[in-house]
Length: 364
Image (cartoon, rainbow, N blue to C red):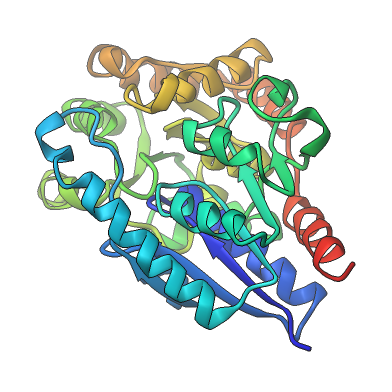
């Protein structure tokens, strides 16, 4: 009998890309397996998952808006509606297991599966577990985490430290620096800065880079700038006619961007960090200040304490970010130290370990 598994969650690349990596590992280990993704309607998983070759069903669910309470009025109704939608999906698909990767669409799916006695698995990518995952963890079959010390959030006997799954096109990339820089139409003789605020962009980073844009050229640097949609038009206008700058709202072939970069500006979400460890990059982290429990700052400080990254706070980015990047570009010894130390933290087989453990449970 063909085994069926649902993978639930999304909202950002930090949840979607590891979910796709786990799906790929499940397929490699059990080619006949049937997989179905469940995500939130209108979110980026509805586009990215089909692009990766998987089926997805959307549910009407939204997360808590931390900046505007008035926007949360419809939340209870959406949650109730989503539970009815999830019940219909579970009834028709009949999964042997459900995997939650985080993001608010994972909560109703795992909760409904647990109520039906279906084995559930959680992948918690951050060093500070979200509230929904903490609640779900009590009844989960297994919990895969990226770092140690997670017993304060989950039952210790259910935890397995696997690291975070990284996209195969990044973990197995063999692209050389020169080839990668030419891919962006830039000059291999110049040091290159990659600026990425994650899949949805980053206002604080974008505004800081925009304010100091001329400084890159003045210091012999060139820029690859992923802006996210809201800032894309403004960035394109600012970079028009500047031969040392390449900008788009989203970089689909991230393996080229990592291979091209000498220095990276990045948010410090767990998945960004996992990829930067594998790519062995010198990074200036600018944590997203409104992440739940400020987990991005905790993630970045963990790396700073290991001399594996630098940190500039979002509130100070306009004054300090570009100057910090330029100083790092001129200090090759510091770059090499950061690369060596971040590279030591790389995990390349998390997706295979997670898939193996899930299959072990459903195959008895």
